[in-house]
Image 1: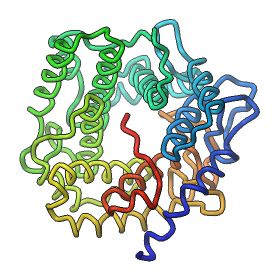
Image 2 (image 1 turned 90 degrees about the vertical axis):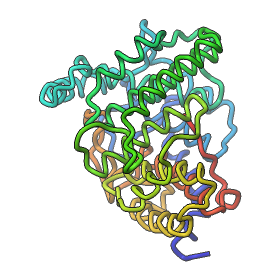
Image 3 (image 1 turned 120 degrees about the vertical axis):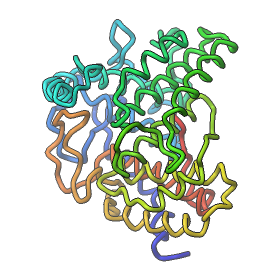
Length: 362
């Protein structure tokens, strides 16, 4: 094996140890950063950390029923009367910042932090769905008609595809979960999915394979494409137009500002390449992702087994809310994203069995 990738073969066992160190005295609750969280254990907060912990358990194939159920219970303790799941501390601390930011960017659909609530609800439910822990009677808020879908997708600024694409992805996830609950018939589900895909593919560029409108920089095109593809995956779709062009676009880019950037480009490249049977620019793709592993290692704290969201620094903001001191240490957010990325890179390189990480699709 190349020295650039040798280190990933021990990630799984070290990540297990890291996850254990992130547990708190409250069952099912986890720390966000290794030692720099701003709020104490006696406050009801840190929903996101438990969500990421469940996803890490899936990646690492940890089958501890007690820990899984405890994390699920803690996540569901944040459920509101309107069937949203969100962290009141994050909501409060991010509200003014996100409100003013939305006003400045003219993102009126994010007034009252609606985007945060939707995102955290989806994150929470997607983690629960990995272990079939979504309550059977959970009332999903989903788009119920083609008109609702059109109005919803038209309401976003598609020159900001990372943001807009995330809402497409959430909508597909909620629709699929409602279908699994048999609240949506198979026929209606297929109609609504087709309507959604038809709409989104109208804004796909034949030149670069990304989904957007107007003038968008390369980084945001790719990050937006990641959101669209996760929306496709949420409803069982793995094929999309212009996969060749999407591969070309990814191979021109770098996307290494933080954990999200480093993960997003790998997911997009993987599903475009997979659709092409791994027969299009495969050697270049493999060289690219090996280079990505070199980038990933810059965020890795091997002695602790976790990754930081930012290079050399734990993430200090979550959905705009300041939640940690941003110390030079790993956090659970960076760890889940980089492990997820490694699970995908190992597939591209054909070493997924040796690495032993299981990709999740949520």
